[in-house]
Image 1 (tube, rainbow, N blue to C red):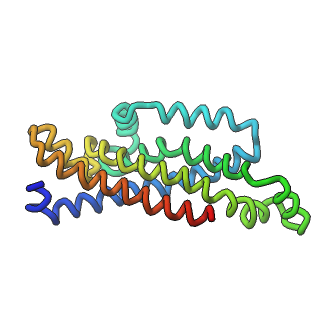
Image 2: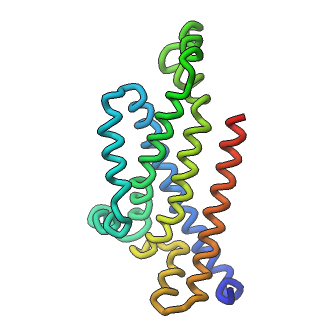
Image 3: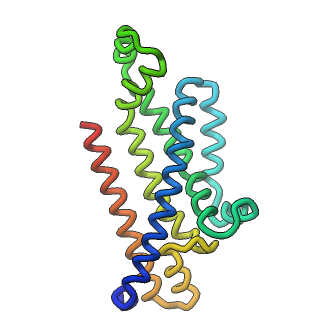
Length: 203
């Protein structure tokens, strides 16, 4: 704990770097995965290949994925963000498709009966009703992103993982603790905020 109390400004800077990586990766993940989930729900023949592809990417060990990405994205935050997107696709795509399929047929028929087009029905009826389930997937991806961003310090992405890796390299338990505690606190905070939003939308 002595490092945390002696270098609060430095730890705060690394925390903000960490949060920026997680937020950037999450925004990109949502922008890619939710449309994919809608597509999978609409065109069922695409479900198996999309889920298989995202599932296989999810199984790639993080260090191996970083090594694969570096020639394309270089060292630093871009590789960390790209890795987070790769790992987040499966859970968000799956939850988006599941949320849309959970909308009762009677509700969809009623929406169609009022004269809504397929696109209007999706955005005005189906998507709002599916949002709690979709947000559940986003929550899991966000918490997972905190861990991915920690490992990404290995490839020069910065963030709180920098302290952990420095502590491992120098066998300094205080440095490891100084990095680990804020990482855990950040993950728990993000989970709590998104869980409350999920619960509120469900009600």
